[in-house]
Length: 384
Image (cartoon, rainbow, N blue to C red; front, side, top):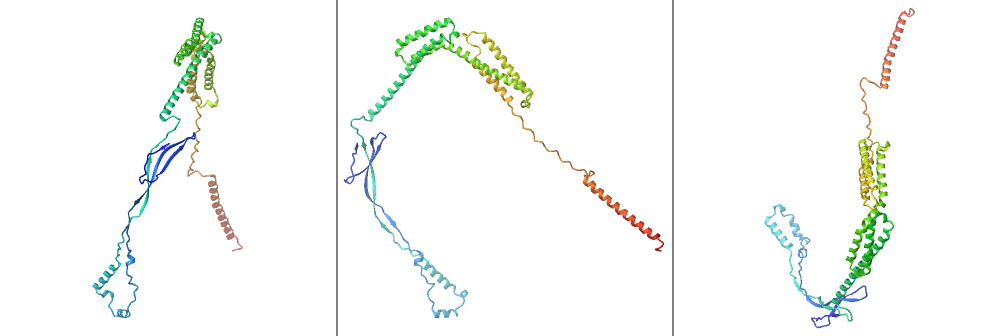
């Protein structure tokens, strides 16, 4: 590592401050260097001071009074009758005494202050027995190129193995599970093509590029792809048909059911569900009859994808109708209270009225009894 060149302004030994870094591999590297120099700089400082008002104010209020003057005060005229000129003179004297007296104490002091001067110093790193920066960059680029070549070689090898595996796999399946899904004349042509590709792999195609192997694999799949598709459709068609039939049957039974959990659904909506199920069933029966009439080596007319789409469409149409929630019951409003008519009386009021009518009647009976006693008293001769 080299630091400099640098030169101190005073010719003395310079102080250097370096910044080093230790990486994860334990290697120390020098990043920067700074030269530090101390200089004395004179900084002018000005200071001013002023004497406050209270310091120069003359305190005359507490001075002792002359006895003669105090005795003469009793003979003086009242303040209101005093001469205005004298009052003004006294006020003026007092104001002059209260004025501040500035004192010029401005002094200039120039103390010396030390200041650190920082200067960047060039640094260079020289590693003996190792690559320089340019050589290191070229080596890294070369490493990337080699890694890319390795990845391309691996991918090319995988594609070659895929072609070889497809040849062996198709040759075995043609005579086993694919035998019913391909015609005899097609079997002969396919077997010849597979043998041709196998011979090419071990001769001219031993060291080809990735694109060549991809093209060979696509060429073979054009011949074997339809056979694989027919076999796949045949194996997956049964479960797909069962799913569609179950969907049709479940929605139809729910629409025609007399269960109370469906009684809130309108009859017209239920009829729509029944019609949709009937249409799906009709389509399924027609396609199934056409498919059953075809041999296995023919391309199917009833595809698994079409069956799944029909089941999804039926479920999307019928499910919202049959799962419609029951509407909430309406809150019952209490009947309005009947206002009593003036003529109508409650049983209590009627009983009270009967009691009131009975009381005057008893009073009248008492009056009649008293009158009879008075008459009998008059007719008694003993009293006369």
